[in-house]
Length: 461
Image (tube, rainbow, N blue to C red):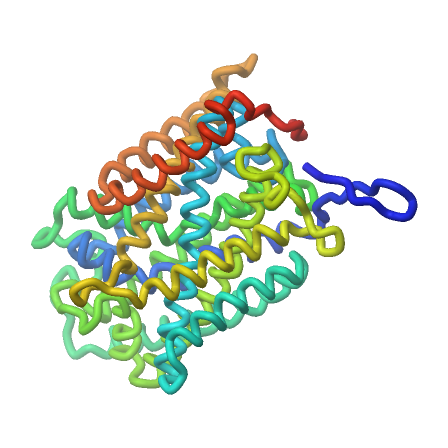
């Protein structure tokens, strides 16, 4: 969990600094997820779920709540950086822990990459005279520099971002309400169609949409990677994880419900990827259109920063256990007490990916927002299933007293995540499968068939 640096007085142990409160954790989780999380994916989910975005978001919330309980409980058992990688590796098997960590690594690296791309394009809409490449370099550098300043700086920035996004969301809801109740007439079932429309409903389409809608909640698991930097982790990690899922689910449902009332599902969007901005434009005119576009830019800045921070700490946990090169990833900066090398590494990957997105074959981009979202969920579902299984083993299977409160959330969380994983499109399964195969082969070679992956000493409850 630490390493030693030489000083004039001899070796000095460097540890992560416990500086975060419950409020910091909740804000951190909300910013990673984004209070505006359902807005970028609104058009994609609406198309896949045939208009049932609210229902998809609510089903996804149920799955994430069960998984959040398992995350919180495992953080109590193992208050150590590394998140699902640590829990699965120590509770089930180091090799499965490595595979889980590798799947999470794809999520955490893809998130800042996608945010860098989105921010660069959004900023280009504001200042088109600046080329995309320049914006990509700027945002990748911005995320990296701010994270290198340390965890306390990030927490202060998160407070400001959460407040700003909250104001814009409130303004949108007010304008949406005025638009809806200012309509001259509303057809029968107008207020219930966002939940269920018999003319378009399809269970298969709904679950495919739900498998994408889970992206609304992706990032809550990042809270557990800060276990070594939070006050009273055995209490605060569980509370923060559940609270973040609940707050996100309620807020997201309200946002997409209002959007579906303003823009009925049967009406096509001019641009599916920026559909929510067009909804805002219909509700509040050009000013609200531009404001929502700018707000999503700010939200992606916060999400990119938070995801890069989580990725660096995951790399630190894996490097500390010698799953990946320890000399580079398993060290902390002695002054800031952060995994500096991991932060820089993730920033470099984000920049490389953002520049690659400009490359196309036969007029088709090599990367799309929807594929990126589904790849994020591909890895996330694997990690979620692993954590639910670890929680089941630790708190029920191996416990002296077997209680239903430890059985039911873990089993339901695992089953729902598996069900939604199956409903991902084949393109995401293929690309994600390649990532997992490459990682597992590397792990086998690096650890000689995982035989050298000895469990590190981590504090347990």
